[in-house]
Length: 119
Length: 117
Image 1: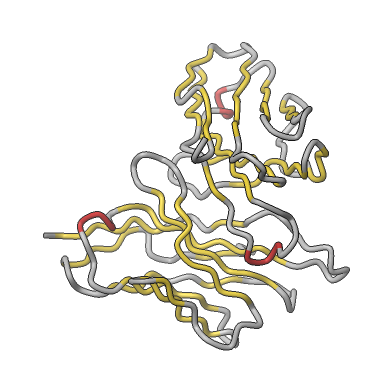
Image 2: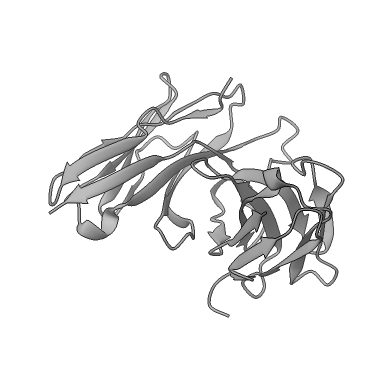
């Protein structure tokens, strides 16, 4: 089974509007972290926002917020007031814990959503 | 440097050729990761270093892939006898520490696009 599922291969949004990018995850760990990265055409992955499994409040970073619904295992990214520069690939990723407490260091990524902002 | 630097940015290799991809992490970063990103896919984990120690190489697809970080800073990913299926973008990432692993932000380089012909 996929650990990270992003069901929207592509999304369009009008400039200045808000958009939600979907992400669902699968883990049996109690302790894990969820990340969103942006990948513009230049290729590098740019960190946007982080949500810990024990965090009670939804994470926010400027125009980015994470709609974390633990029971549904979803971690959707909300971008408010879209800008032309937001056009890029967006990846949801998870870092899982290992019960021993040592932690797992790798990120597991979804297949991404291509966001296009229309002027 | 200010960010993670990878070289070369682009590499074309003939099938069967050996290649070496370089990653210069952010100075002082303990953790270093290599990921492989096939066209239209998300990055997939290859290997992880903590300083010079390679703690996890479970993602390396075959014994043709080898990574090293001998002095705990610069890392090299080597692919021997390249095959067409090795064509991908190879991303390097570094993070400050393994402590606080859950929310430790990983900084990525721009990647090396390898094309095997």
